[in-house]
Image (cartoon, rainbow, N blue to C red; front, side, top):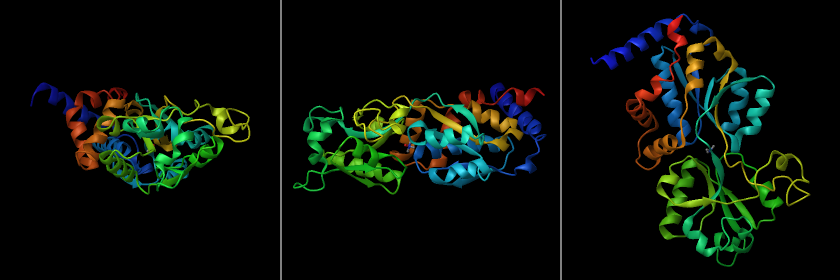
Length: 317
Ligand code: TMO
């Protein structure tokens, strides 16, 4: 064993022992939420695998985001590694203001989730990425040549797209993918035929590694856009704006996790940047790796990073 390895195993051994003084019987296994998009799944496994190394029993619980809020506030699930500002800020703020969850800090990554198109669409719709261009060329996104009504392909996550279409007077219908993977499949088909497509996308994501494209520039997001009809270009309706542009990406935890400082501190310390998230999503969605295998690969290749997440206070007592 080289000395680095010795140190590492020493640290893990020490950690396991000191964390053993936490009363794990109180919560039993640490329950890590698995949602339905790739980066969340990979980093949930990364987190779970590190927790296992600490000596925790880890249970993975599959949940759509809509079902997780109540459960994490009641301790039925414990760890959520990716709360996206663009899609989940409201629920997060509600729970935080009612003191129902722990804010376990932000990832380094800056995020955006919004309507997106591949670059070749720009020639067919002059004025993009400005949203007003969509007023003149909804027909290029239509299902049939005789229709003027464009199709927007949304994800299976709650978004106020219908409210935005109404507030901005857009001639679009929404079709929702049943699973996140469907967005990638539809994008690939359209891209190969250079067919116009307008769909939900986000960053960081593997898409930015494989395809060139842009987000629609809707009127800049503002909290009042969602609550005050008078705000923005339409004085009668809310949601006449886009999603946040430099959004945060957060981790949250059940309050009971305070009884497990080693686990909670590590979760607080975990931070991924845009490149890391886009890259391990690419390993799965393009290279075809399984979520857990991608987590193993990341852990094997990045010991220097995850070692820094293991809080010294876990060893020093
Ligand atoms: C929450 N998501 C990254 C799928 O938009």
